[in-house]
Image (cartoon, rainbow, N blue to C red; front, side, top):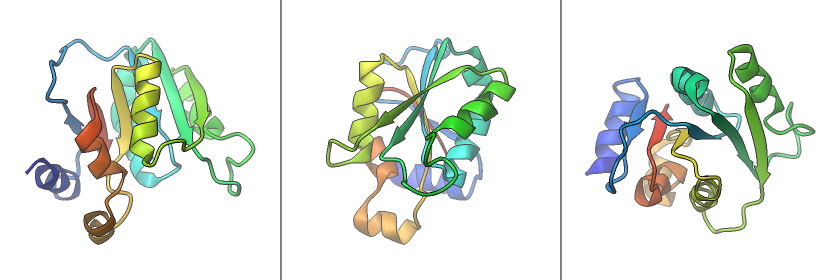
Length: 154
């Protein structure tokens, strides 16, 4: 089962995983990348792993869904990440979206489709394995619905 393989690779292999959709895959490097940013360690690890691809991309979109009303980015969601990426030569734009669909993964995939993205970068398994197994989560949901490659890291 794909989820078990992904979980083993992320937790035991400690390396990023590129999940490819079952549909036709184009082997050219991604040119339009969406970063799913939720200020988690997992997201930052995935972003660091994706830096070579982000530098080569023509468009990088930091996507923040329902940003928290407290914390360091409350007045500028995605701003600190944008500065970090700029220091590494990556020009990024920020999209702040409301959760208008039942699952965060649905909002993220719809946004990726809307801007014609060809890859998503996100953290994987930000919650415990038990919680993901019982309640589900964005990682599992993304495995089910992603139509473009997704780079995940934990």
